[in-house]
Image 1 (tube, one colour):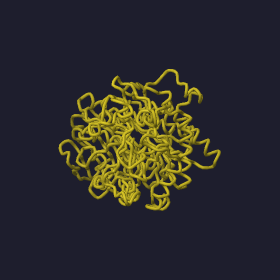
Image 2 (cartoon, helix red, strand yellow):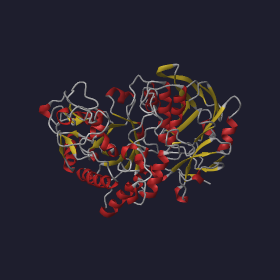
Image 3 (spheres, one colour):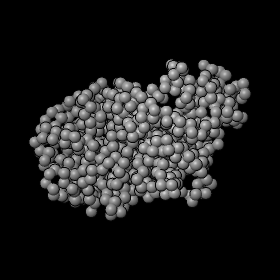
Image 4 (tube, helix red, strand yellow):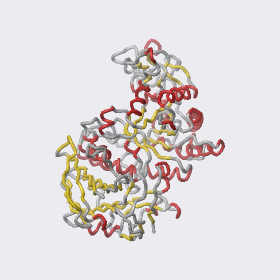
Length: 599
């Protein structure tokens, strides 16, 4: 029997419970939570089993544990005409981190209106950003060019720099920033435009910058990478003192982490791609050993500069980099022989990396890694960072979020196996370096300008909270007018008064996850119960929402709605009283519903 314990957990102790999605006897999807004191795990295959007669800790005031058959609850609510879902409001499982609702960059108006709590300064250009001169190298994103910020007041650098303004603005809005700290060992030299593969040295190339034709892409006409003759053409070497000096400057400007300044520090950005993205200074693929050396050196420097700083690594770019080094994955294809991995006992890279960070703490007494940070982009062609919309792409996009958690879902890309990113992260941490937080600082499911993108983004945000992720920041987030922005609004500012989805996750279940997803949480500050229902169907879905806790009967509720009928706003669809333990709702075609039950 799995027990839910009534726990008030802090953000960084969220790993105490393992969230489990199980298939009930009728094949229905049920979300439960294991008891780690009994050795239960979210990822063991024997954990996905019928979830009947689960003992619950009561939060409804009686102090007596309830016994509920979740399969029966869903069956009772499902008929030929109606789809059954339930929310167990009598017990909660874990604290939902507010930092799962973060984004990369964006503008102050969007950040404010979406009530965003976390904002990341990241991406390829931050790997080679010179904070003293406000110049960044864009790497393979734009012809390996050093690009200065032309609006910078040069006389007042570094205080006037883009980065310093970004962090000041972010903190001024009451938002926590994440800063990317370079580990690559090079930064732009000089203060003007310059290119890493100039035609004056390397000759004609495959593509040239249309605005600066003297700059090439570092590829020959026949498609071969040019050998780097001198990485110091437009860059200068740096070491960890560059990072320590930057943190000292930022602390002077904004205070230390303990004083309300910057708390979160990324250990660079996607190092396992440096041999592609920054090959003009780092043409050799990164190995296990190099990642260990650089991570220990730079993370230790960050902790020395600010002992309260929180670090995130290894910032892996995607699924292959979870398991192999760039040395093993050279030419971007997995090989049957992995000589770098074999040196370290065939351990998956992330597992080995966590082990090295743990061993370092055991040797020195200092934890230098606080969060396991993995980027996640679907490997389905045309899905991530794409606006492609057709019936097949919609289906795959709706399914793509299942790779975040579902052990029964075989990813539809070349991976062709269950990915279950978040439970996998929890398992690796529990087995290798307990106490480490979880972060996904880049993800994007595409179609931000379409209702499909809104539904998928709402699904992802619900999954992040339910699966106990600690931090998440969407890459290339939507603008205010795009539908995907309203997914954030549903969780962070559904009524224009910064009212939010709850912060204590509640158990839920659905008869058909492919048609309707359900997420629920109790809001501690006022006692409201918040329920998100996502109708992915191209038809109106009649739903029976079962609320087995009798204490919900007679309470006022409001139904907030975002749908394709009006893509410009969230509307109030209904205001009513919970009449009994079952509430019948008609969910409009392709819509997000938020039910707020008042205390």
